[in-house]
Image: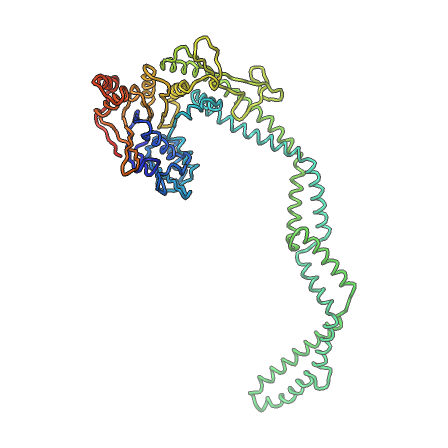
Length: 576
């Protein structure tokens, strides 16, 4: 239930705080006082569309806050899924709209999206105004209401899941068949790519190795010149390095016996001599083996060109090319299995059609049975609303489809996501007239009463705890108004109901009565709301009956309306 609402700078409401009670909460007041503004604010609080025109003139932001007490387990589970903890079931919702466009929503001080708020709001408040009565003109709403009444929503959900899976399988098979030629072309192309890479016989280290060899071949003459000059300096010329080092060893050797401190330099010189001899042998060997081979250089150039061409097609280096080849091979393997996949998928579709068919038929049967009960229930409710002689019905249409796979009543039908065929509510307002589509024959007042009748019989199935009726009294009065009040009172036994009304018969049924008033202060209009105490209620109901001039008779009648069946507690609370 809605425990409290706070509104700041919304339309002509400057600052308002109201506490609400269980049962039937009636809002009354002069036309233009701001009754519908409060409903608009509540609609904003549960995810309705934000409009900056609703911000009070001269203000930058508007704020609406509400405290809800939740008892429904599924709704509490949704709150927990959002990431909000509420051990006592109480949640605080805040909605801020700004002229700057920076609108924000909060749930227990945690920011959430408008979409999330709207999803939660759908489980908290069921709002019925003139626009919502018009929803009855849309047959898709009729399906929802019938499934709610007949408790066939779980059957629809189960069917819809299987049907969605079936559609996915059909789409996949169609795609596979449509792309068969493309698949064959892809297979051929993949085979060519794999063969091209395999023919190159690549190895990970090859490119680096042949690049080094290429560099060596291109500089062979320079290398040879350097080798020969180095050999000359080491040993081949007079006064070469080895010749001089040999002479040094010859001079130091006899001195070591005289001066032991020269042993270390002698040994190091000796080691250097042997090391340089090995260097000379290596250079000489390398010189003998070095050759300039233009043919080999050309081979290397061709090989590198081949690798570069493959890199342009398949990757930045040889390793990436080889990985790409493996990817091609995997894709080719998958494509090769597509024919087998299509056979298996076709078999799966046949099995799924049997499941979908069985569920679709069960859903249709359940709806047909529910429609009979709904018809009698609505007609009974409408009769109690003094709509005598009216008839209500549900028309099912099952267009045949030779390509359909569901057989129902000896006809082949094609299911949709909502089941088999279509349905529409029918209505006949006067005896002797044929039933016709509700959208084509019902007046605004009749639509409001039909909606109330539906909500009355759906009261137990509907888990939404708060119901709001705006304009439910359009076009009615007298005994009909009393019956509308009775229905609202009955619904309020299990729901918290809010109703804006101009009729004393309905206002007299209130568990809690609130008057919405506006006044001008400092050249600004302000709207407020307060809960009426008993005597104030009597005066308000009397005013609604007789106008501004309240008589003793109208006061007596007001007391009778209020105390007729359910006396109201004589205390009240609320502030503006």
